[in-house]
Amino acid sequence: MKKFEIFLITSPGLEKALVEEVREAGFAKPKMMPGGVRFRGNWHDVWRANLELRGAVKVLARIGSFSAMSLGALEKRARDFDWGQFLRRDIPVKVEVTTQKSKIYHQGAAAERIEKILREDVGMAIDPDAAVVLKARIDDNLVTLSIDTSGESLHKRGHKAAVAKAPMRETMAALFLRQMGFDGSQTVFDPMCGSGTFVIEAAEIAAGLRPGRSRTFAFEHLATFDADVWATMRQVSALTAPACQFFGADRDAGAVTSSRANATRAGVADFTDFSQGKAEEIAPPTAAPGIVIVNPPYGSRISNKGHLYGLHSGLGMALKARFSGWRVGIVTTEAGLARATGLPLLEPGPSVSHGGLRVRLFQTDPLP
Ligand SMILES: C[S@@+](CC[C@H](N)C(=O)[O-])C[C@H]1O[C@@H](n2cnc3c(N)ncnc32)[C@H](O)[C@@H]1O
Image (tube, rainbow, N blue to C red):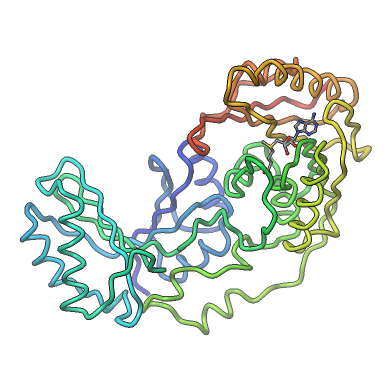
């Protein structure tokens, strides 16, 4: 099967964690790029990447490239392109264009030329809400064509109904767990679990549940799709019962209810345990030490900050008093808040974009 370039998008700052995941998953020679990871593979690799990778937000398939110095040249090259290899005439498509450092500078005009060819020469419908998105990036007069093979962002695992305030994206949660060295064999406890993202991701990893098992993908609408091969690839092997439990707590009763509902839908209710309680009063859920990972409230307004320092200090005191041997990871926007825990923090991880904010993972070694 022919190979081409596959690009995995992730949140900037998490490229290194993603490239490690991609390498471990057995994809050939992945390379880090700003905003993601690229490697060469075939369509089966595209499907498997969508199904199995926890840290990728999107999987793009690079289907071709050519140079074009004018809209006329773009139209001609688009007319010569063999779209039928990839796109189906009966499935509508949306075209998105970005340009930089190029003679073609008008993104809308460039999109119109490609849409015109797809509509008039290929006979496809153009629809802004189409499940299939064709991306043309024009950089230095080179047009690179990619198809977004994922569709909805891959952080939408397809089994989360209840969302609490400010949820962590599943893709980021998985990569932060990886940065903490979580491999499925350690107990995980999130004392401010919200909708349960860290706990459920950890339980899924431990149980060998693939992140894309409950959802559909844009690649199912492409000409390259083979339903039989996909059905075989999706076949579920027996669930591995994890060797440990995964715990969440939150002071908000609604968050606890949401977490339980989400864990049930994800099929990990038997390995997870959620309870209501204050972070300042936590005790270790197991005798053997594990990992505490937490994403406390940030509070964007200055007026909110005061009580947040108190909250972090209270969390830190509980951890120092009762969590000897546990490793702690705090995902927060502000070093000052992480420091307010009074925990012995290591050098923080890279700054990661998260919904208009920048967060970092602050970790400790096992607590004394
Ligand atoms: C940023 S959210 C966590 C989001 C979570 N990581 C998720 O993915 O849904 C912070 C959570 O901390 C909880 N919280 C705030 N103060 C708390 C306290 N003193 N003790 C326990 N939980 C608290 C809030 O109810 C909220 O669910």
